[in-house]
Length: 211
Picture 1: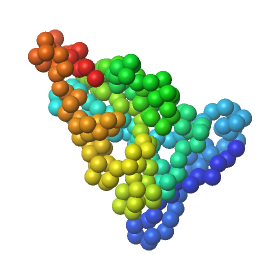
Picture 2 (picture 1 turned 180 degrees about the horizontal axis):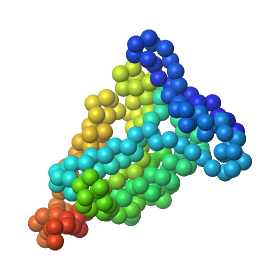
Picture 3 (picture 1 turned 120 degrees about the vertical axis):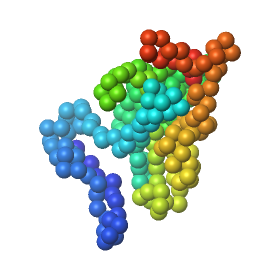
Picture 4 (picture 1 turned 180 degrees about the vertical axis):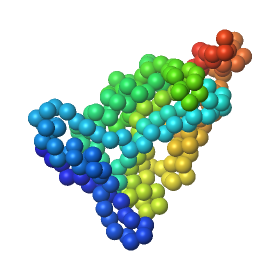
């Protein structure tokens, strides 16, 4: 089944409105051999990948999240919500205390975070080295119109925010989940450990990282 594509933008020069759909997206949407009901496959694009490649600990510890954008107060379909919630769980490695989070909260599809643990060590081709990445998963960004400049209301995972807060979120100045200063991620939580980083053989170990 071919669904209508309704993601649009306004040209800053002529003021005309057009869809943001790419040629590939249009081809996929109109290809009967990729019909979601017949082939049981859903294909979505991801609007934004936000990557903080340098933090308080340099390039050895980085931050990342995915952002799905909805304009004109539109929302996800049930199928898209299900897919992206699963993706958020896969891409989120936030450590939280399971006893403090109810089962209902963990199952809330509007709350794109999950229980998991620690940072993930990955290889950076640019640095030719292993780095530690804290991935926060996926978040939904909604505008009442088309963007921050022309919207009366902006929502981040259903929480109403302003444009300055959005800037702080995208810059990782604040935690995208709890809106606390991101610097708290680097705080030492155990008195017996004097430093959040232990360096052994040139590799950073983030065992002191306790979030």
